[in-house]
Image (cartoon, one colour):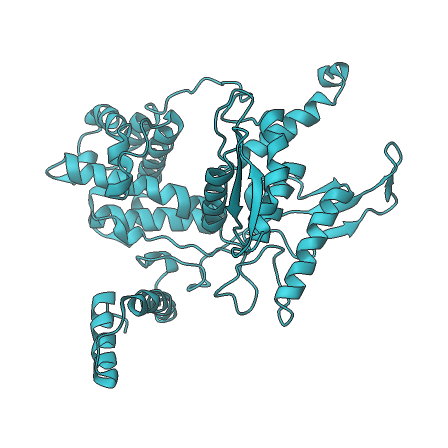
Length: 436
């Protein structure tokens, strides 16, 4: 089982199925078993592995409890595969570098798995397509500046960044910030290897990294461009009043059953009969983002018992309104606060979601306020981020919300709700208070 890949396992399972039932297994059956085989095999590999966890080619916290997670990352339902790096000398160095940074707390799991590794995978792809011998990237320090410039030009092409062939033409341009991320990831790897030559020799043995110098890292760092600050009060980062007024009227469609229909007024003023999406959780999540301005991850992974009374202050004297403390899942900045005061409207949405979970899953004590509805026997998995984004995209295509200029508005990505809420709060403050 430790050395068996999926092709061998699938052939074995197909042989067993055909001998037992006299026919080949259906395609859907093979797909489901592939997921089951992958997680079970990763868990088995982790349990039988005596070396450091980062020496494995596939990392997944669900399968390997040795992977360190911060207190603000209690749940990580996604993994990554440094084994997809094709150059062996680069692959082993990346695993050691990222594993060390993760254990030291310099990087978090979400950063390593979703950003840093992808940047270095692109670097590996550039090496494989550019050099006859990729090891030459560490040969001459004087050639490093030109190599960094060449990588920057290559990385700016959307076709080179796409991981799948079908995604190569979806993006017309690449934001300079994304290019900077890739350059910085490579430079940090070079710097790490340059300042740890003895450890690198002991762990990796003879390798091209023995030629790595701080000059290599400095040359790549110098290619990180300065991006001028641009105001975020624009169509991409802000939702105007015209679009914001259309959202509450259309949101019930998200929670409506799939067998039901509802008449809605689209952004162009046309009335249509639309079928429900059957996802009341997504409806309440987007509503909480609009009302509180919190990030999608902070709402999606907040704890089930996230409300608490405000000691010594249960009523807002100015408005005569009851206040409650809402504790969200703040996972971006360790020292940042993780709770805010909310009014009765926000509290009602949260209590409605709590009641819905208790009704839908009476035998489960949920850990999260918004939970994954399938494959979640113990109720310890949050609502998947991919499902949330997909649901909002499909919902946007149906309701066709438009801004004051008549431009269509996509509800995903949702970070613009945060910008909008913070802008509204700033507008409520007196100018003299801002000057302070």
